[in-house]
Image 1 (cartoon, rainbow over the protein chains, first blue to last red):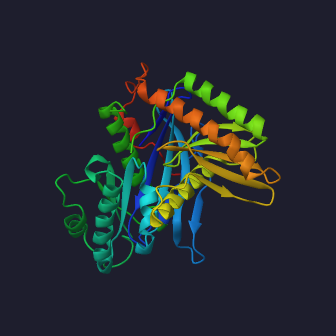
Image 2 (image 1 turned 45 degrees about the horizontal axis):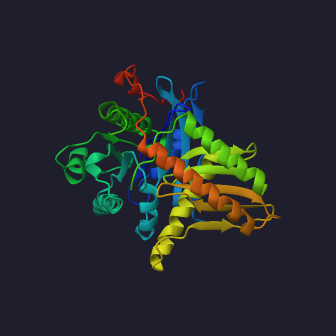
Image 3 (image 1 turned 45 degrees about the vertical axis):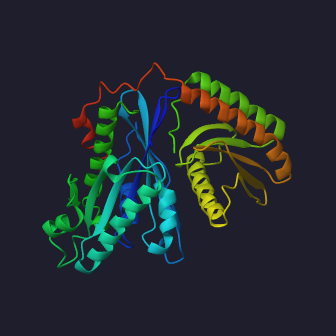
Length: 203
Length: 159
């Protein structure tokens, strides 16, 4: 959960990009890291990737992004990805610890739909194992790889992945071209700050 | 799993006192208080050459991974974690449910001496965190000036 340091006037927030293998989680972070505007009030940290020799995420990718989102408070967003491969499920649980907001990166290709659904179920289970409930955590859906021909229609993806009682914001994206990446990030930060507004940050 | 409490200046003064004392007595280079979700809470010592934010994140996740290993061998937890390097070594000591103390020290110092000094420091920090947890800070996070419209595009893409 978010950390508030009244003494140093800092708010620290953790956002995790979650999704099936090769859906584009790392690409999202790479694109933000490479393309984010860095005005004086924003500090961009280094991107750290713990990857296998074949460039698959082994543990997580991480990079810190700092800005002043709330008057007088330096807000540090810690962006993480989890490994997509199922064999690293224990690692996903570790990375989810203390999560404040989630971006679920789904692969828009038809043959990946089952994997999307399975990974979403794993997300809910992993949160439960940490005594967290997805309904209490702001999250958004990103339907990635829209640049590939013959992908599933958005309506179909909504039906399969965003068919819960409360529907969450969805974004079409082509992360490798940076399309939809910033829209997704801005929406999850917006949802998070709205939640802080309604909660008064701490219950 | 409880939440890490809000800290006020009095808490930071206490952390400075304890962590500086740890560094002075042990001759370690850096001490970091890290929340187990990966947040760097406080740091003391000379950290010019180290990206302490990343260091804290990597340390906490490595520590959490080791706790998973502990469960697999039916241990409740491993209370510390030590990595030996050629020039520098690190020791991570559990503080409480939510945080750990990370110490970076030159290799010529022994891990035994480091544990000797780090353990009481961790206990003292844990007590302070407990005090902070019991407190209800008067100063709340002032969100009155936050306009949700401003948040719509907090991060912009370079042209």
